[in-house]
Length: 379
Ligand code: GLA
Image 1 (cartoon, rainbow, N blue to C red):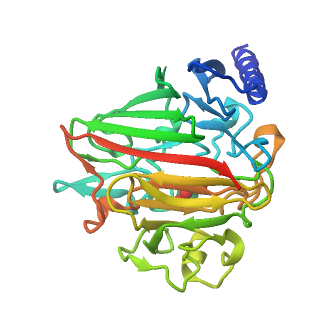
Image 2 (image 1 turned 45 degrees about the horizontal axis):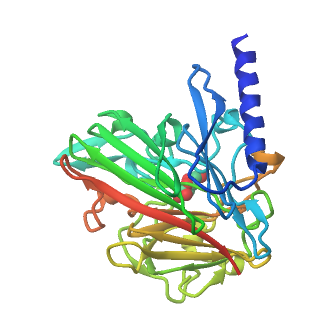
C-alpha cells in the first residue's frame, strides 16, 4: 500500500513536472511556482520550485539535493529547449544518477586517499571512488533534503538551506550552508553559495549540471565549441588526483584558450586524456579575485551559447565520459557517453592535501561565499 501510494505520488509529481515543462512564459511580478515532486520512501515531501523570467526562460529546482531538474534556453530562432540532463521523476533521482544537476558538498571533486589532516589531526572519509573520496562521500549534499524559501527580489529566486552535522561523512564542524538560485532578466542562472562553520573544516561547493546546448538527449556534445580562460591545468594521476603540478596547456589537447570543438582532440594519444577517458580535469582560471568569465560554450547547430562566470579559482570540465547509455532520462531520452558536459566551478581537487593550492579551509567566524553564473544567449 505504502509503495502504491508512493508510486502514485511520484507519478503525480512527474505529471506536474511535464506540465511545468510546457508552461507558457509568465510576465510581471516575481511569482515562484511551487509544486509537489513526490515523496521519499520515508514519507518526506519533495518540492519543485519553478523560476521564470519575462523572456520565457525557466529553471526547475527540487529540494532533494538542490537539483536543477530542468533549464530552458532559447536558440537563434528563439525556440526554447531544456539544456540539462535529468530524470523523469523523483524515483529516477534516487537510483541515483551521477550527480545530475545537484549541489555538491561538503567537498566537491576528489580528496586523495579518503583523508586529510587539519590542525595536526587526521580526518578519515568514506572512499567512494577507488581509494579516494568523491563529491562529499557516500551521502553528499546531493542526497539530502534542503529547506526551501522562495525569494522576494525582482528576479525570481529560491533559497535552499542545509546544515551538515559535525562528523557527517567524516568532516569536522557543523556547516550551515545556503544556496540561492536566481533566474535573472538577462537569462542567467545565478548560484550563490554561503557557508559558515563552528569548527575548523574544509569546504568546496559546486553544482553538477550536465549541459547539452542542442537540448537534453539530442546527441553528443563533441561539436560544441569551448573556450576556457585558463593557461594551466592541474594534471592528475590515474585515480584523477592532482599531482600538485600546475601544467601549461600550450601545445596540448587541453588548450581551450581559443574556442575549439570538444571532439577535435579528445581522441588524441595523451596520458591525461587516457586517465580521464576524455576531459575530466581542473583548469586553473587566469582570472584574479572577483567575478570573471571562466568559459564560453557555443553549439553551432542551434546557435545556443552558455557563458560561465565565477568567483571561484578553477573549473572542472568534464565531458560525460562515464555516461554509458544505461540511464533513461526525461522524455524517455537516453544518455550515451559524452552526451553532456559539466563545468563545475570550484577550488582545486584535493586542496586539503595540497598546501600550495588555494586553501579550502573555513574557520568559525568566517563566511565562505562564492558565486557562479551560467548565462545563456544565441548567435
Ligand atoms: C565529476 C568527476 C568525474 C565523475 C563525475 C560524476 O565531474 O570529476 O570523474 O565522477 O563527477 O560521474
